[in-house]
Amino acid sequence: MRRKAKTDVLVVGAGPVGLLAALALARAGVRPTIIDEEERAAIHGYALVLHPATVELLARLGIQDEVVEGGRRIDTVAFYEGGERRAELDLSRLDSPFPFAVAFPQSTLEDCLRSHLEEAGVTVSWRRRLAALSSTGAGAVARVDHLDRVSVGYPVADSSQVVTRTEEVRPDFVFGADGHRSRVRRILGADFPRLGEGRMFLVFEFSSDGATVDEARVILTDGLVTGLWPLPQGRFRFSFELGEPSSLQARPEERRLVRRLGQSAYPHVAEERLAELMAERAPWFEAPVGDVHWSLAVRFDRRLTDTMGRDRVWLAGDAAHLMLPVGMHSMNVGLLEAGRLAAATAQGLHGEERSAKAMEPYPPSHLRSLRALLVPEEGFAVTAGADPWVNQHLAQVVTAAPATGPHLDALLAQLQVERRAPAGGTSP
Image (tube, rainbow, N blue to C red; front, side):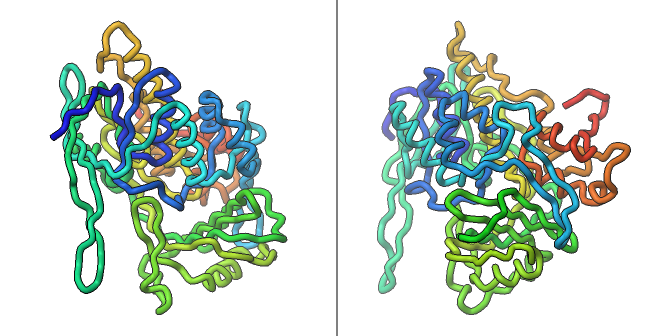
């Protein structure tokens, strides 16, 4: 084992949440070390929309211009049932310096964050895996495996990951931003239960030269949700919910094809299915479909940890929660959590004592607010005068709204939806 120089914060995971945490730390004068067990950044990522509060956070880091200018502004989310427009959310009415969402793909956001990190003198240490972690009064002690790939197999060549060496890292704090399979969460001993059934979606990203849709649309068809988001450079993203995972029957040409999304591989979906599903659920999208850039079938679970962390070890993003995809809540909540963690850590480390006692990054209501997004029927209700259609489709409306916190409450108020008061009557 080789000992490494002490670092202020070890960030585990180099997805958007971990990258933003590291950048916010560096901007605050804190030394981060960021590791990831992958060999390189993912080419594709599912998340593609930044909420207004997330753009506000990026503005505090000084990188909002390239995001807003490089993305596609979304002012309206419209709800359809079949071909009929039933409701809409107007983001331009929000009290924010950025009263809109921005379609800005996850992979592009990661490139942007890594570029600014490198300017700050911080680079991602790829092929590094957290092997063990303990917390002491003076800090944390982590064992980090260095990984490499070696060729194995004969006569068919393959490769396998091996540990080339292990080093010891002694950070003051550890952030677990290492996704739904989080090793940090497992080391903490936190539960990660499901909150309801998962959902299977077929996802297609494609170009269309003649499309005039300049808003996000959520289509409800027999209880199934379809999301359409316009993207920069004439691209669009359709996400079609399936009724039952068993209804995804791979065709012969699909069975041996996979698409990588982050650390996982998912079944490829034939392009012909896009035309079939559009005709069934979005017949109003009449523009010709050009190149289909990628497609896949992916299952989204609903999970929530029972603790966001303690002492010197904290979680953020998919390591702590998994949400349904249409409103892009999980990544955006994770980015805001990363900002909270960085601010609280900087305050603690810049105090008179480098103490874990200064770390209170999350309010007591945080887990309750997350649960409301995961189980909207528990967390939200319609008020008098609400459209019965909104009441009938409350869960889909909440999970599709591209906002968090007070912005989410203000958006939903447009449809006479409000947050339920928790037991005891205090607001979250």
